[in-house]
Image (cartoon, rainbow, N blue to C red; front, side, top):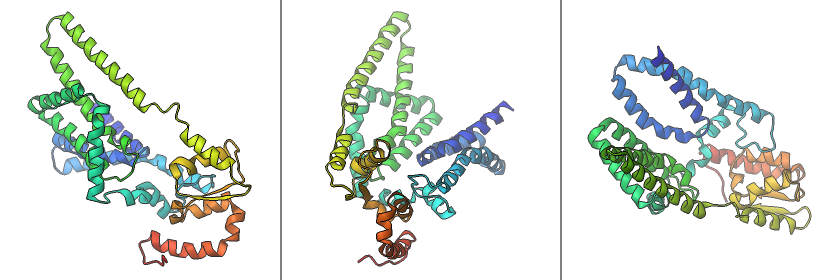
Length: 322
């Protein structure tokens, strides 16, 4: 049936979206609630879920390319997911779990940041409309209200427990939820105006407000003239003695950029750039051996001894850290 085909497409797209980012899981509470509300809670429903697992896995199968590409030893082999263990660590984001659900203080900090930044995303007029829209859904369509609320809570509840500085993109689903409520409010308000000229004036005002906010936000977030990372990285590389070794923890500002400038722009390829934080990852050493074979070979004994303890660290075993 046509409905079955839509469900198959839905399963495939959900699986495919997981290959983009694991935060797709934030859709699960709302989607599962809606699914069981529509189909009930009985054995037949669970058989349907099993049926949907096939197109879901088909979408997820894009991940099979990852170990194949890793086995080809590319210049930057993040996670080196050739074995099942390394693939599973890469797939589940093991390296980043240290910042997830770390403390109540971190959650409070991120929650405060979210509400402080919210007026930059939506003017107060828009936030007022969002409250109106949520109220409309609450009293006219309880099912859609709960669905949007679950999307919002899942997103904010997860994002505030991720202790990273570039957290903004993790709130996108919450912003989408607010936008849905704004749309509902605008639609309901337009229904109140019967004559066409009044509707046109209202639409023009709303569009004008939206344009003003877009222009205002664009000024605040425009990074087109921000050359900090480029200038900073070039200044370091170009002023170092030949064959220097740099030990850094500044991934965002220097290390990642140095990969680009050294290997794509061919700026100071003689300089060895080592990321101190990545020394805690066993996959980093084969990459270093490929990038800087002479440096690693001179320290081969120390690297071997360090990797013995690193194995214990990665597998949650007691290790020597002194």
